[in-house]
Image 1 (cartoon, helix red, strand yellow):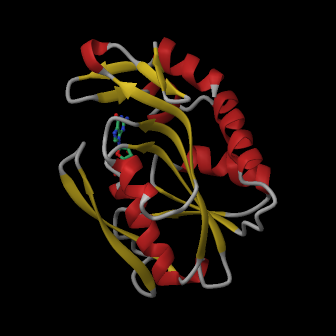
Image 2: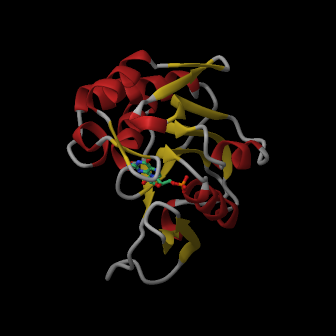
Length: 196
Ligand code: 5GP
């Protein structure tokens, strides 16, 4: 997605440890115009599949998921990372290890919002080592919901998430695919070709 790549090139910075900082439009401040375009792109790719819900993980998956939900006309459910006073029982849960933060979070979704009648699209902001999406897949499995696809805003294709998720067989659609962040340079993958 050209518009997204331009934002990444112009506004993204590379931090040590192969981390891409996109706080100015996705992870802290949110650019609604860009997020609307992101939502439309996901909706176009996953339209006419009978999706009933979008499922994401707090907090940075929420903005792209809500815009996709608006386009597809379906509710958005986000897995919570922290226990909540109002979310204490009847939960689907999974453990997600974050290599970036080097911590494990138990994620949970209330059984009230997901069940076996649902056809769901999973959305997240980043795909790196794939643990967050695998956690969401585990939640979907517990709910016996059908997963129809996985939508990722920024995929770091040089990490193992993509190959791990391909093994699950679900269609994966990443709007920007990053081939490398070496020497603080952002290189994209397109049709198997790497370019700056
Ligand atoms: P995974 O579970 O695929 O390793 O990582 C997914 C989560 O880690 C994302 O939801 C995102 O919050 C965070 N993450 C991983 N890599 C990056 C990165 O390079 N930049 C930012 N901003 N977040 C990242």
